[in-house]
Length: 160
Image (tube, rainbow, N blue to C red; front, side, top):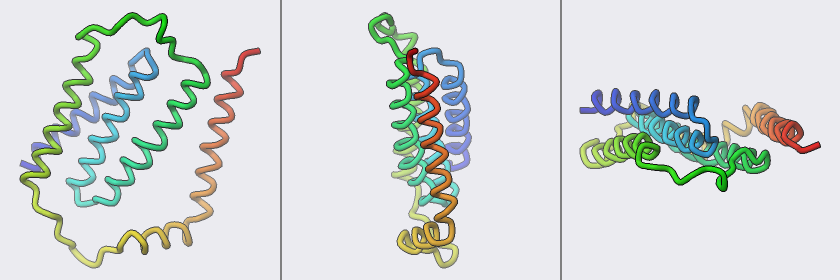
């Protein structure tokens, strides 16, 4: 059962990512990418990494997508007044992928037993201490790279 859910979610990830790449409307591409991130989080949970699954949702589906949405709004890439109302053919891919993802989550929550620890698993406090003490400089460098990317996007997108 878990193997079947894994392959279904893998297909959802690939399809949603392809839709995100080929979508012309930037906001729709972000929705497809968030769907892909949520499906990837469920795959991480299936593989026995619930902390990585939570980080996937919080960091990528949450923070990075908000940053992308902010850049899209600052660059004024979406023109909702020029776009006509979407028909059912525009909604079916997102609805289908969302339904598959929701079904997989419900099946996992009802069928899947709680994960048994294979050894000593660190708690969140210990994990965060290690992350910020040992890799604090790397995290700061990554945050600066995101800031530079945002400033560069704003610079390139400003009107002359």
